[in-house]
Image (cartoon, rainbow, N blue to C red; front, side):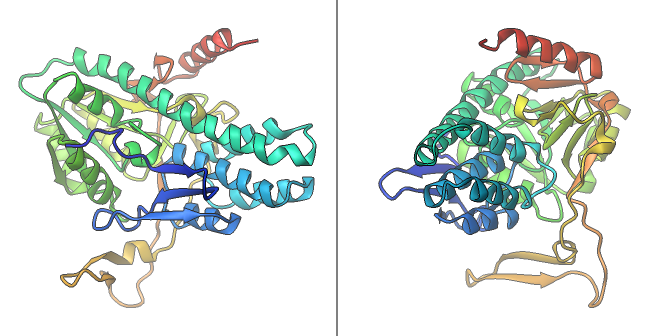
Length: 363
């Protein structure tokens, strides 16, 4: 049995001076490490979703910028690299946040010192993500312990917010892994998450490796499970959270929040501080990435001969709309779980959280 921290989603090879990531487009059928050595390879890994999940996207971009500065540390190339990486995925706020962390780290340095400092900052961000996700798990575990339940705790999740979406532990799955480590019986309802099936392909794979009991269910069955009293809480991640507590997450999250509210089931969102967009007033200002309609019209997988292929689902010539994310209003969120503790999902709650963060930050 493997724990959430047995494998990591991104590793740095100091000998070859390159990053290696798990190619998540091949999971759950094949575990393959993909080397990233050029700016183009980093951009492709993010845009093609070889890496995905807001925290991991940001850290991957930070390493991409650091390695590009090792090639050319001029001001012009720095800004060009930042611009190229920013264009890969528009919704996850961690992308811009991580790039700004690296940019600030090298500001004012001579060109010859930039690459080393940028790499150091990327490694710091990687280590920080592991610490923060572990804390999210600990705070989330407190919420899980407080839920009244008979038998194993029944958690419903959506998409993938485990260690594949971060570096280790994850966000929404971190409390589940912490519960398992604490000996607390827990079962996870994993929604498939059409059209890319991150729940079926990634979350189920993670939980299986960790030995956490789970059941894979169709997205459209989740409302019935909530109505039937089969779920004690819904626990999801976030790609961007607005200053008023509105949450942007994988499309389909909003429907679960509505069903949870209608049936009196707590709806928790787990996220690191880096996923909060303090400058975004509400969910209406969050850009929603629209991906290719082919993701809706086709299904990819491995056939009986272990060949990767895609099959068409809709009639030839069909058009499809494919928003990758949706907005869950703050009023539907029971609580936000961050590395700093539990926060109310509201403008006032996040303002208190920001004051807490500012007061604890080193001068």
